[in-house]
Amino acid sequence: MVNVPDPTPSSGKLVGQPLLISISIFASLGVFLFGYDQGVMSGIITGPHFRKYFGNPDAVSIGTMVAVLEVGAFITSAAAGRIGDIVGRKGTLFIGAIIFTVGGAIQTSTTGFWTMIVGRVISGFGVGLLSTIVPIYQSEISPPNHRGSLACIEFTMNIAGYSSSVWMDYFCSFLNSDLSWRIPLFVQCIIGAILAAGALMMPESWCIDTDKDAEGFRVLVDLNGGDPQNPTAIAEFKEIKDRVMEERASGVARSYYEMWKRYKRRVLLAMSSQAFAQLVRNWRPGVRLVLYLTDRIVLSEAGWIGRDAILMTGINSLIYILSTIPPWYLVDRWGRRPILLSGAVIMAISLTATGWWMYIDVPRTPNAVVICVIIYNAAFGYSWGPLPWLYPPEIMPLTIRAKGVSLSTSTNWAFNFLVGEVTPELQEVITWRLYPMHGFFCACSFILVYFLYPETKGVPLEEMDLVFGEGMYCRIRFLHITLTEFGQDEREEREENADDDEDNEVDGVDETTSLLSTATPNGSRKRPHKKGWFGIFKRRPTAGELRT
Image (cartoon, rainbow, N blue to C red; front, top):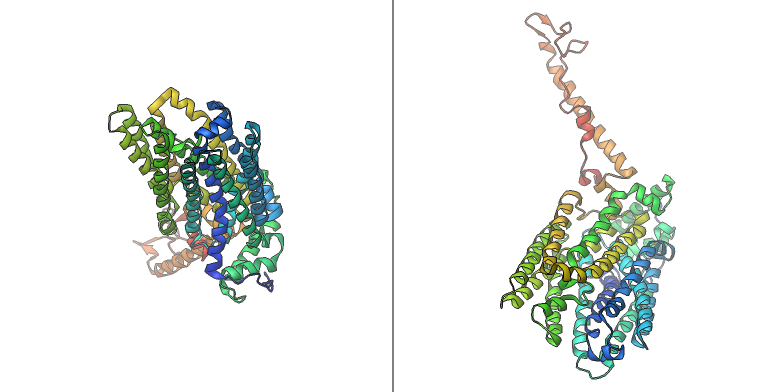
């Protein structure tokens, strides 16, 4: 029996919904930050003052300068699982913000190519920590019925960061000095400092598993209105603590090996969501060699050049932001699967249409491509943009959530770098065919989701085992349901057999002696079980049944 502790004194005045919104806004600065960083390089690397300062670098140097951030992000995202379990979610968020700010300061004050490379790698270290820990933190503080919408708001902040960087590049391009590229780089330092300060004031979501029960209960109480007697807060505390004690009693180590051994399916689903998010995203008007060279590359190919291309990218980014708003309302109503499936269909059509317009190369091609890009980005922003950041942390068990999400996030950065490196070469070799090729990836993502992704809408994180049919609690509930159902069938059978006792002799033949009968030794005709043993135990109860 779990004892509910007295909560520690509240450290703030905000409770309930205002507290949840405030926490979400500050946490979302983390994704705003790496969204800004993804876009900020796209404008400055083509600016005349930037190119002059770095001695007119070639395409390889520019590509290295841009993509090396993803190498740093991959390294720390893979390590973030361990770091998050040691210093907690709040501590990891603070460390990531500080590291990113230091990297941004080095980039802003750079004296040459290699200094910029060092700054980009350090910023990448910060991005890797933030991109891993923010979705985990957001999922752990969010109530089940709003978890999806809050995660989608978080992604909107990511795209808002990207859009802000594009417009910052556009306006600074009018400056006739090195400030045209140093100012956009310095802005990310300001954002990083604000996030670091905010992280110190946010509550820790990783308390109960580290036996800080009073502190953890206080967080739950504050999120549920501030009343220590709130039944929802008490129930949530007991449920989390029960799950922690169950995992400890199992004696299973919290290692990557055990995670892979016990939860292989979940890990692969989480990794696949991030991999396909890059395979369907990193086509040329979104290639993350980059969102950076992004829409601007395809717009240049389609006839939009110079500052006009930056302006069109900025306008496109605003439409992109608007496309991320519908999931706020739909993800916890429709569910995850319908949004991912519909998004894959729309993206596949848009990509195929883009390739066709570039193939025929007619005067209408520039405007047609812009329309296809806008439709595509809208579909991505509504589906495969936000949900791969929501899905991994909510399907992972509490004890290995940080490690599982770190693997999925490192998959994101690995595919981000890989596709960004090979796409320019593919563009030269297969030209317009690149777009329907990524349309094919969209079709593959549709098949994967349709057959393998379970729906997680409204399921508490502590009950996710029920969705996958795993865990001790799930097995106990399954056995209880099947045995109860079997007992009900047996009672029905006995009642029916009792009614048939008066008919147990037909045409003078005693059914108790007939080799063809199904009679029991007491003379009653036994009705064959309507489901049978295999039928009973092959049935899998739903998550709703298991929760009751």
